[in-house]
Length: 272
Image (cartoon, rainbow, N blue to C red; front, side, top):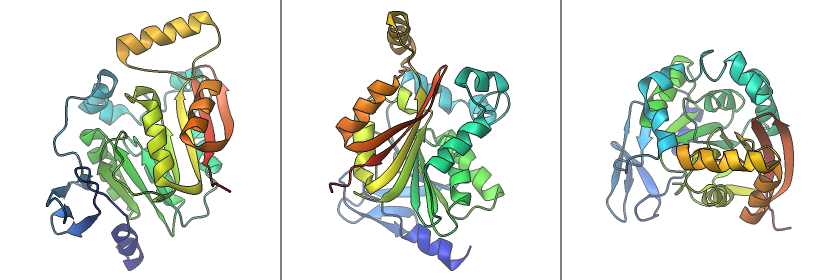
């Protein structure tokens, strides 16, 4: 590991999920001087949620070993049938999202609900002078992500076990953020968007990929039923645009809205 990478990781700002004070690096992982909490780093993952309640229904699937092992394969995320349902292949989606961020190479980028690191690792490769942080609620996914990053010799990534409802970062900690394939399973999408607004710097770019709700009463009925039965939401471009504006984002732009998939970008309001 080069000194540049060490410096990058040492500079990542974390705040205590218990008392919201700044955390410091220690031999055991991260520690809080205010409340004396210690958060370990094991198997390449910083665990800021050492104890938590049982995950919501839609989240439980992301804890299963089979799901973790197959998530990035052609049996799931890279499956041509999934690509057809989404209206674009995964490779096309990835290119749309990475290019939409307009990265220069020195940014610090948050991958919220990063899963297996399917975006975190490509992001890191685009950040030779910066780095990517992946945060997720699923420890099995994060451990898999850390193993893959190690195999690919990526040193400018960090994986964090944390909650999208209470991000463990201070204000303006990131230059850009993505949340791809997860906002629709969060218990409170608006709260998550407000959290993203808080941790992004002014004019920081955000890209979301979510299940798309089609037009018409029947689509709305299906969306309500899916939400009740499985805890999976969906959004129209107009609905998500309104939510982003309410959370403090501007320059909302639809990058893809076809079949069941919606990709949208926005910029944190600069106040100028």
